Length: 313
DNA sequence: TTCCAGGTTTCCT
DNA sequence: AGGAAACATGGA
Image (cartoon, rainbow, N blue to C red; front, side, top):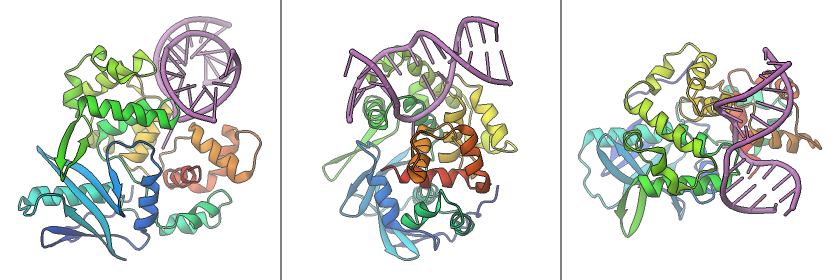
């Protein structure tokens, strides 16, 4: 897996703010617009062109606003914290945003490939500069996958909000409340019955959320462990051992959290709809057809999927 | 009312 | 290995 090494130069202080370098193939507007398509999102707020988000770094919870600075930088401003002198916190926030926006991936090869691809041509032209906005926290990524199984996306956001507001923590800043996703440690201490207030579609999902929380809290499952696997196939094999995680959720997590470029949730119904839409089909494409159509996406399956999803909003 | 939704498990041949 | 049924709520 080729990833740009995170140099210590990728961010700098500007007074109390941070300036974060972004690659050439980056559009703040495209990413902001993508975030705005989420219905009933509980983990960030969009207001007047800025992205507000609570971020946990170690034991510290903090809230920042992210805005475009110039073609090569983002500005990260703290909310209600005029003097942030904790260097670990500053670096941690910079690292989180870098990861969230997937700033380490060079999209030039993807765009070059996509221009020749009948499925992707339209999407990359429409959304140039859009990044695979990720889910850096492993437990959050797995929960979001499990919550979203076999239900419509709008209801999935409702379930996430209930889960977050029942079991997460919140910070008050300038009269607003900002929520952080529940930690694996918090949920590991609960029983499936404790999660009943969330109103999950199946009782099993509550078990899955508690079981995976225990795996992560105990150190038996981690991003490091998954990154040490040889390839996507091996990482998928590790993940589907876990009850509640099938091929779709495994690839979804590898794509949004582990950032594996060739993760490919091929069973995703949204992907099927997007392909049907682009090709003007009457019915959803077969798996065989999708494999044919995606043959040229090698090592870019995750970005191809992300861009096709974007067509649906 | 019926169908489908960012699927997975379990139970069958 | 591969297929069918059960799961279960909410929106169109």
